Length: 232
Length: 86
Image (cartoon, rainbow over all chains, first blue to last red; front, side, top):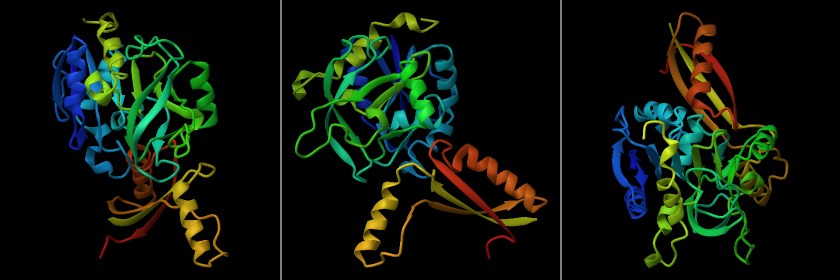
């Protein structure tokens, strides 16, 4: 499977994402944000970072990049798309995912591990986890508070579009929900399930050399789901 | 004709506004207990070429809906005045 990792001005962790794909058995390559085609990619990863300096709102300007039209078509055809952190923000701004990500409730940039519960295991990025499994992976964001109107939140629950939820035991220093996300939402998907956005960074903890490979199975999930893409 | 347009963007009413709350607490600590309901948003100023004020406002409304404001989390107000920035 060929996986495009999209680079925006201000992206980060693209090499980690590419390496995580390759360690899971895929072929990763970079696509520039000004490209208008995905070079035959079977799946697309939008990495983290601070595209366009987070000017105006996180992801608000990146969503109009030339590459986004190709991503929109890829998604509409059922192709897998994963947005991590800033990638999640871009997908929300682009309307490919519901809701929005705003400033953390405590107004602080947070860089720390979080525990999340896998709520849904039939997406191309979570099928290698067990339903209800708790995994500990890192976050690094200032604008990670997931918000949406109540009716939309109800619809997301009803349609099973919540993919990950913050679920750790609170400790002395931190609440379980680090950023005040409504309904503890850490990741959502579109109604079809092929587009997923998550605030945590699985690619930053995807090999045991780093102390844990809890994020590795996000990429294993993708590589074992090739049949989701129409032309692969 | 050129119009000077000011857009005021505020967090949607009812949505938690942690920046507004933090500023309100700071004002209270500075002994301004008379300040309440504080919200922090953005102001954007731009010149718009349009035949009339109404058309300038309509253009900027479209700009707000597409880019300047997030329809999920923010509300905006538009003010149009004659003449561009000096």
